[in-house]
Length: 184
Image 1 (cartoon, rainbow, N blue to C red):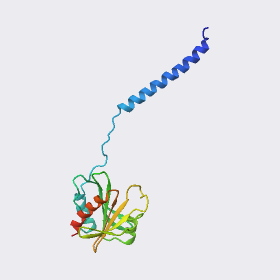
Image 2: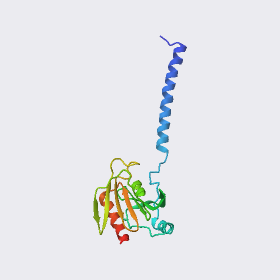
Image 3: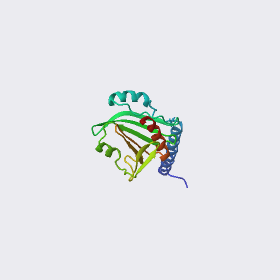
Image 4: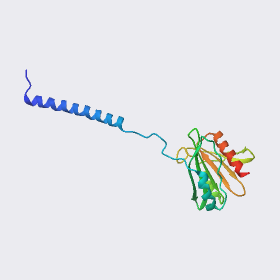
C-alpha cells in the first residue's frame, strides 16, 4: 500500500515541524551557554571618609566616620534631606552580606525620627560601651522588605544617630561601639 502524494506531503510537514523545533531548542541552548555573564558585585564600594569631609562642611558639624571591620564595606554615603531635616547617611555591608545603614542628624525633630523608625517599636535600652542606645525591633515586614529589621538609636545634646538594617545584633553592637569611640 503506497501513500498518495497528499499523504506524503502531510507527513513531511509534521516531520519538518519537529526538526525545526529541535534546531530551535539546540540554538537556544547554545546561545544561553555561550553568552558570558558577569556575576560580580555591580555596586562599587565608596570612600565614605572622603565624602564625610564634604558632608561636614555642608552640615556645619563633624559627621561620624566609624572605623569598620576590614571585611565590611560602604556602598553609599551622602547628605540627604527628609522632612526638611538634613542628615548624614552611610550604608554598610557586613562580612555576612547584611546591611546596616547609619543616619546622623544635628537638627533632628520628632517627625524625622518617626520617619526613620517607621514600622519599628521601642523595646527598651541597652548599654553599649559607655553609651545608652534605644532598641527598636521591627513590628512586621519592613518597607522596602529586608531593610530595617532592627534599629538602635542614640540621642545626645548635639545629634541623633540611628543605625538600622538586617545584620545580626552582634554586628549592630560592633558598629555602635565604633560610633561610641567618636562620640566620646
